[in-house]
Amino acid sequence: MNRSLTIVGGGLAGLSLGIALRNRGIPVVILEAGNYPRHRVCGEFICGVSPLTLEKLGIAGAFEPQVTNYQSEWFYRDRSILNRRLPAPAIGISRHHLDRWLADEFVRQGGELQTNTRANPELLQPEATAWCSGRQRSRGGTLLGLKCHARGFEMDTDLQMHFGRDCYVGLSRVEGETVNVCGLFRQRSNLKTKQRHELLLAYLRAGELEKLANQLQSADLDPGSLLGVSAFQLGRQSETSHPEDGRLSLGDSYAMIPPFTGNGMTMAFQSAEIALQPLLNYAADGSTWQETVDTIRSDLRTRFGRRLRWSMRLHPFMLKPVGQKSLAALARAHAIPFGLLFAKTR
Image 1 (cartoon, one colour):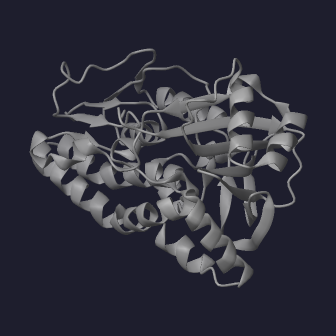
Image 2 (cartoon, one colour):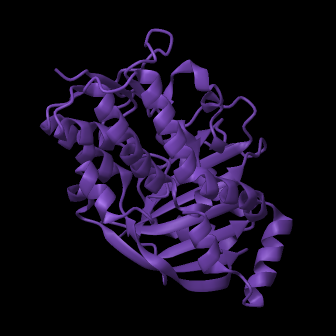
């Protein structure tokens, strides 16, 4: 008789792990605070995850339909500074579609999905529980994430990265002839608007991205996709610094990689893959919970340590005006090691 497992959080890491466990006969309950389908603040850009990982997790079928992105272009204050082909093709797919498919598949495989259920850490024992509940709230956070879907937005390249004052904004093509727009901004207390799309446009203009703001204003924005998140921290989340507590954190609950890398969704799937075999061993009574957690934490550090270190060092460079000016100068001199940066953050 296999031990049952509880997963807190029905995002990419939680759902894909749940599906993989159910495919192998493990009883699994997922507690999800929200419902499906819904939009999430996300770059909706997957690059670096292997087909073998998706097959192992049993989720390869989720990526139909999808858009394959090949070409990227960088802009500094609305001026193109770099146009390069991606070292590896990337999948563009909306979370609205992807999360719904994963949730339906988990239930189809016999998993118990409890939506609109917010887990209380004080009532859940660490043992047999995997926390995939997303970013950890940070009272001192100064960053703001804003996202929307736009139709009728013309892009000459598949993926765009716009660097503005105290911000950077990524645009990627997803299914349905739609462009996902997702930006990271330093919060400005003086910017207050009644509508979310007005807030996004206001932040773009404050960031000296006037051309991009005008293009978005002329496009057809999906009202349901206009979202914002704040009070979060990037990098390793603080709860992972207590190895003795027996808590297992995966996905964004383990670490949030800076969004300019386009690697957050990939890390969610990879963390589920890393956790799968140790959790199977635990469920079959082949290891203790602490042994399971220690093994997974060690594998997470090995798999993600380098890319987190590189991205956290590069993040201020990408966000601050002095770093962006240097970036533009390097681009004009054709001196940006695009392939190296791509490899080190994956």
